Length: 603
Image (cartoon, rainbow, N blue to C red; front, side):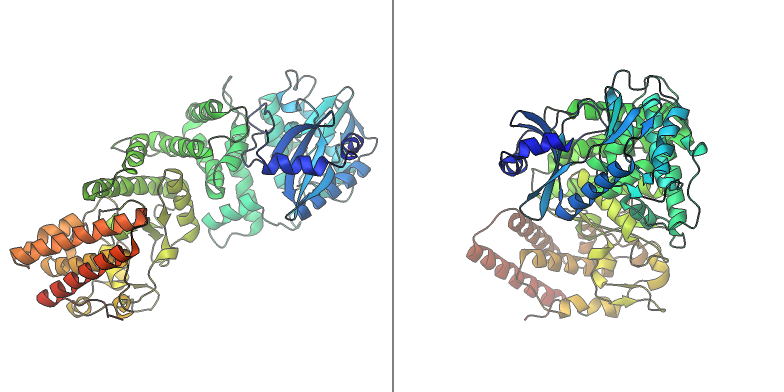
């Protein structure tokens, strides 16, 4: 194998050709199946000096490790012949160093993979496949990548590629459960039925050390902290088998290929969540419901594939997330209201329009989408009893300017600072729908309100904004039991944040006007019925202010919003902007003095 590549390399121009491929936007591999879609653009097929080659881009140290594993596997498997596969050979790639601590692993183009051969499953059976895998183990090679998508038949030979995850073990060692799971899923997918290789090949002893891979590390963040790494691995194996073993319905899409693709297409957390969600759907609603979802995902991918591997990733992610979450709402937890697809489409339309009315509509859509996605996540992860979704900031107050984030938290008395791994998952899902969001990591650090045991605290302004989805009133959820409402004295004096001094920015002025409005709404309302949305607060202000002051406050809120939105989207003239900020700040100061409100300290 390497002789072909070395022949191309002798021209002295192979490295230059590869750099041009990856840095100059060359064409990628013409993919022949869903289980090999190069989303990251790390693989290129090309011709050099009359030879058909494939280059895989890797960090230099990772490339060295993979090549060394392939070379040692080739040595250990020398002259291996297995019934049904013939002579088993290892493709040892050539390593071509590139600038920037990168390297390309270059190998001959080997043609059609076993996974997509028309007769790929002919003459294969569970005993024959198990015989191949055990033969590798008998030679001290535990190759989780020994699966049909990494195998090529050439005459009486079978060539194996992709050695990055291979393990060199004592001859005859039993495989790890994770390796066996990968074999079971991939080979069962080829034959279209569960081969149950896990019942034919014994796994390694429980005392074998477990180091979590990337999938398992994400999964562990959603599971009880007391679970051991081996327990996390066991749970991950059960979930993945439930998600990716072949369906019992003829003609259904490949659960294994779509599961493999999900990890490449989706952000890391959502890739893992795909497996957990689909496993839950399949277990609770059966093969028909799962086949319907897989059919939708398969149609999405087939419709987006093109001649190059650079798929329209953003659109595919968006459609994938909508399909997953909509399936749960359809089959596991039916909801009333508009379909998620309609809400997401409307939100996308609003992205190009500014103004107060649009910001109110944008906030309503963002709050509903955030609530619906959070409900699905918590239900699928079985955390719906443990965590509350609380909205904060301008989304909670019902006015989201163009370019603003959605602020939220998934928290509880047991997680007063938020459940960060689950929040990160929701942030990923919202991002796929075009909503930038921040969880508890972005919460204010000020402590105007502190619980008796000192475990929980809140910034005053954050506290007055908190609400749960579906409520227009202040609703701190679980936090009310620990912190209670602030006293009139606390509301009437500058907060810790305000004591740090005024910032001469449009964003800070927008905060100032909302803080003044919230203080007056707190005074005007029964504390248990305080409105949180800005429109709701403006409606109660005439109860405590005269008509002229109420109008002035409304004008200030609208003016600071307009300036905030305008400054966040364009590069205004700096002198003009600072002049507008100074004039509005002066108006706010005079208004607060007139009605007796505290404000930020001038620096």
